[in-house]
Length: 473
Image 1 (tube, rainbow, N blue to C red):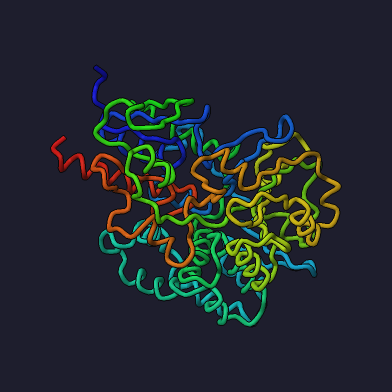
Image 2: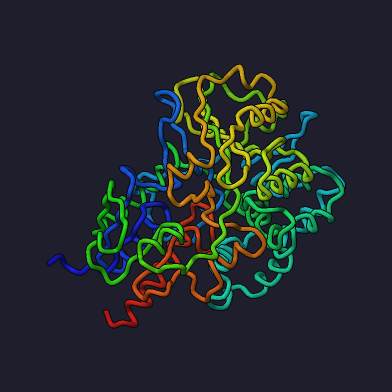
């Protein structure tokens, strides 16, 4: 008879590994089971195109990683994680060769918007500068689990955050500030007119001013590998190539913690229609490039940015998000691109580069957006196609095949439209718990949602710990 484990974690993505580490550090016996032959989930690094070109199939830049309250308590640097900062977190170019920028410096950011909007931006962010740690603890969680640690800042931010970003943008005169904020809000993969999109934009901006938008040396796999190393140091075990189809496939445990979609949890744990009302959002069409040289941006600031947003206007960005969520083919996509080899020379052979771009498409879309994506890049980097040595293309079917959590290619594991970034995957006081007292959900399907920050796993681990302690472990 196998011994009873304290916890079994299903899925070795950043949240599953974070939950496992949190429990193992409390002295609990923990084992992780991963269906694929490598760990990482949305934080992997692979040679997708040519030998020596190391790509991140999903997440590449981590605005919430270095400032994550969960990661801050973990000595991940001992296990190989080294954060690198691009010269500039993000650039948002325009066709005339100028750009709005998101800099570590509030002043430099504000000045890129032009004189009419610089003061407005400074006033917008001033109440929150220097308060990232408190804000991260208060907002990177489900909002009805306890009182905020900094109630004044919480209320002040909340009044702005609840607004749709088009309403926030009425404060600004020119398109540079409006386009940049709309691009930040578009990371939610939801219509810009929804409640709370201003909060998404502001959190990303404040993260840049506080901790930058860093990348891990060697690729996103370094985050997953460091978490696994820390887990093993505390006695945890990781199994790969182990697909879980039902709970009986797993060793007996006091708690089962799922880093999966809610749909998969319900199927495996036998919870029937518990998550039948979960809505999955828009997907993306992603291309990883091996390039013979750096991207030839016409905007000079884009040459030093780790991330480049290609919109450019708030109207075009909003139209692209609306098309994806309404099931229409992309025509002029909004692109989020990353160029990690400008900062990390280990990612490509000498003189060569890796480049990563995605635009939004409908959930489950089976078309080919390569031409429209590259036409959009060429608007801001003429001659880009001439540098392409190889490309790896992934639409919704390929994304879902790579990662079962991405239902229909939804890399957020659940729609963030409207209030669904707060109420995920359904309305309940403790979303990390389920109808089964021994089954928990820790993926980005629960608050605070998408991103490589480990906070969903952190809060799920606390729910497990409370439940087991109450049961008199």
